[in-house]
Image (cartoon, rainbow, N blue to C red; front, side):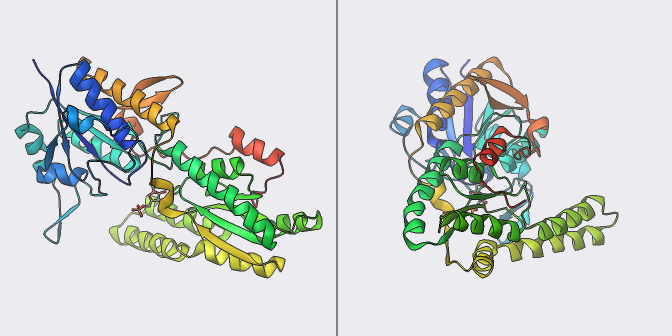
Length: 373
Ligand code: F6P
């Protein structure tokens, strides 16, 4: 009997999403004889039943295209703003899954998507996910697609910033995405030869950063590149976050939880200007001129790298095979040269941070990179 599958892309877009849609879609249609539809704009499209047939024509020619042909959103099934009000749309999603006669739903996304997919699996849907994000912070997979492309973009940016920093004898502070994980800043910082790398996993002391820069000046290097992850924190603020987070987790009353959440929100708000503030502090402490470059969404745009196309195709085609054999409630993880189906219960909420004993950190320290610690 022909199987029917639905595909959606959720969360921030990422290079490689179309390659993954193509991998799932072509393997499902051509190799396994299934019918494939897409839902527009993430979980919102599933709630509103906005569908599109993913036939041979639609799936053709999308391997190299950035973004997602299906559109995406950060909407959550259980907290979706509909007509100005936040509503739980899980029931509507279950209904639309049934009315489209689906045998499986494929959700392509990062950490948030894994949690949302698990919610739908808990409501009886045959859900299977793929790990996508430039942040590389999804647990239980070697890597996520999108990361390699963003790493290349951020590395090239650091390469280009070197010549202008050198010419003007300046500090260039370059902010790199990654949410609360330091993979992207660490990888691009090492590959681009940044002199200082600041990541959330290693809270920094600005005086130590300034010392590292002044040591370079004494050694005849009048410029420095500081690669700072958007989630990097000075030691004092990291302590505040840790305390507020502990309060939130240990809160006995709703009021206590609300207070802890408000403190965390206030810290996050203040953190918005973090990179600019860091550059100003470094100017004061070193006497050098500093400039800021925020790479932002440039890191998510454009064509996927060859490595991301390969990874997305590998995961997407393995996903179609798992659907064929009836394996659901799993994420298709990258494991070595192959893939592994890992239970969504284990993936959901398991953010992968950079371990402090990671070989990348050890190598960076050996070539003299400062982490400000
Ligand atoms: O998760 C990908 C990511 O680009 C993060 O690195 C960043 O913190 C966030 O998304 C930005 O989100 P938005 O596109 O909603 O501004």
